[in-house]
Image (cartoon, rainbow, N blue to C red):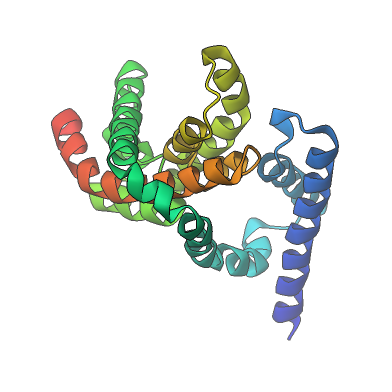
Length: 230
C-alpha cells in the first residue's frame, strides 16, 4: 500500500512539473524553455533537494514510461486526417525520410570516429533519431547499450526541438511539410510535438516521418553498423 502511494506521488510530481513548465513555455515561448527539457531539470532538482533515489522515483515513473507506446500510436489520428496529402506525396516523403535517416546515422559514425568513441558506445547512439522503444531494440540488436540509446534519443530530441526554429530561419525553411519531415526524422516524438506548434500539416509530417524513420532505421541500421564498425 505504501509503495503504491509513493508511486502515485511520483506520478503527480511528474505531471505537476510538466504542467507548470508547459505554462511557462506558453507564456514566454523561448526555444530553450521547451517543457520536456525544463520539467526534466525541475524534477532532477526536486529529487536531489529531497534526497529521493532515482529507483524510488521510477516506482511512479515507470507507469508514465509505459504510456509512451500508446502515445506514439495516438499519432495515427493526425495522419488519418492528412491521408490524402500523404498518399499524393508518399514517394517524396519516403525519399526524404530515408535520406534523413541515413545521414543521421552516418553523422553519428563520423562523430564517433572523430572523438574516438568505443564501438559499443557508437552502436548505442547510432539510432539517436529514432523513437525510444525502437532505438532501444536497435541498439541492443547491434550490440550496444539500450540505456545509452535512451540518452542519445533524449539529446537528439531536446536539442533538435530547441535549435529547429533557428535552423529553419537560417535556411529559410517555411514549408510545413519540410519542417515536419525535418523534425520527425531528426528528433522523433519531441520534434513532432514541436512541429505541432507550426500547423497540423507539419505535425502530421512529423508523425509519419518519425514512424517511417523508425522502420527504415531498424532495417538500415545493421547495414550501416556493419559497413562502418564491422
